[in-house]
Amino acid sequence: MDGIPLVREAFPRTVRLVSSARLRDAVMAPLVDDADELALLAEIEAATSSRLIAEERGQGGIPAAELVHGVPHAKFINASFAYAKPREPMRFNPADRGAWYAAIDVETCIREVGYHLTNALADANDFNAVVEYGEMLSSMSGVFVDLRQVPDHPSLDANPSIGYPAGNAIAASARAAGHNGIIYPSVRHGGEPCIAALWPNVVQSVVQGGMYRLTWSGKPEFKVEVL
Image (tube, rainbow, N blue to C red):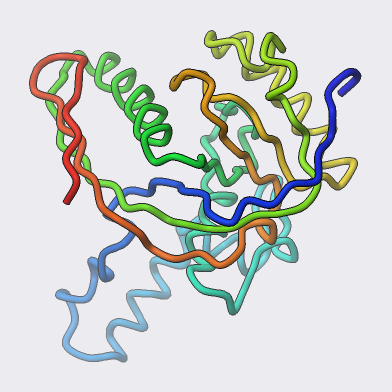
C-alpha cells in the first residue's frame, strides 16, 4: 500500500443493493403444515447454506468468530462475507471471502449492479430479464484505505484481469493491518465514492430502504423503476 493514504472517516448513511429474493419469507414455508416441519426443513437448508455453515464453524477465508450476531439484519451482513464466488475474486475480496460493498448514492449501486448483470446476460446471449433489488442502508466509521486520492491506481482499472488482482493485494494488506475497509471511486459511475467494508463488524445500524426493479428487454441497456 505504498503511497496510498489512510483516512479516519465516518459515513452516517451508505447503501448496498441486495436481491429481493433475500428479503422474502422463507420459500419453504408453504411446503409445511407446522413449525416442527419447518424446523426440519431448516436443518436441511443449514447443511448447504454457506452463511449458516460460516456462522456455525466458519468457511473458506471467513472464521465464525468474525461474523456478527444479535444485531439488526445480521444475516445480510454475514451473507455478504460468506457468499464469495468460488474461484472468482472480486475487486477487493478473494474467492473464499466476501466483503460488504456499498456506495453513498443508490445510483452508483444501480450502475455497478447493472454492469455486472448485463455482462452475465451477455454471457447467456439473452438480454431479457427482470430483477428487483432492495436497499440495505448502514453506517460505517474508522480507518480506511483511501483510493480516491490515487485514481490512476491499477486496482481501479476497468479491466477485471488488471483491477481485481491489484485490488485484492491492497485488501489483503489492509486486512493484515487491521484497517476497516477501502474507499474508492466507482469504476462504473463517474468516480462516485464507494466503500468496501473488509470486516463484518464495520457494518453498523443496518435498515432496509427502498426497492428498485431493473428490466432488460432484448438489449444491453436496462430500465430502472422505483417500486
